[in-house]
Image (cartoon, rainbow, N blue to C red; front, side):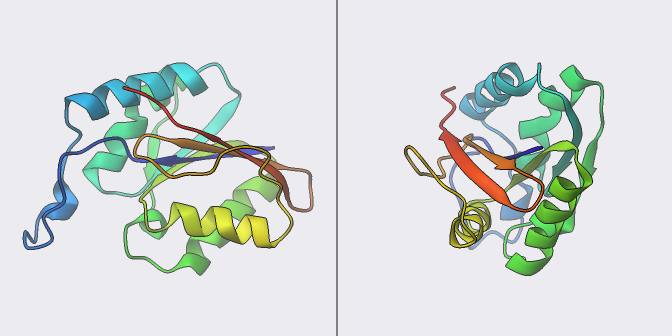
Amino acid sequence: MTIYLVRHAAAGRRNNRNPDDLQRHLDEHGLRQAEAISLLLGARAITTVASSPAPRCVETVTPLAAALGVSVAHDRRLLEGEPLEPAWDLVEKLAADGSDAVLCGHGDLLPELVRRAQLRGMRVPGACGCAKGSVWTLTWDGTGFVSGVYTPVPG
């Protein structure tokens, strides 16, 4: 089983003084990254696509969901600023259920999920990172995550 953790694609600049910052949409670069993610993962046996309800996250995985013929489930556990435990429970539940899944979230949460998997024995043989529009491929062996591969996605 495989869980793909996707950081939302490029969405302009953060403005913490703007209360609507969470509502940012993908910019042109981000739209190209979303298409590249769809090409990267669109031929996989993915049955679940879940996303933070933030527009930039939903827009990142919408082309992929369309290519797979599934809908994007909005999941608040993947939202920026949410605690780690509920998101980790989601990741483990999907992996244990035996379905390949894509989860799209934010730069504060995804590195913590990867770190948690590493602390529990997951090997990361190559580069690490969490650039906008990147994908972590986490492989589950039935009892835990055994490997994690980081793939930056150009736009």
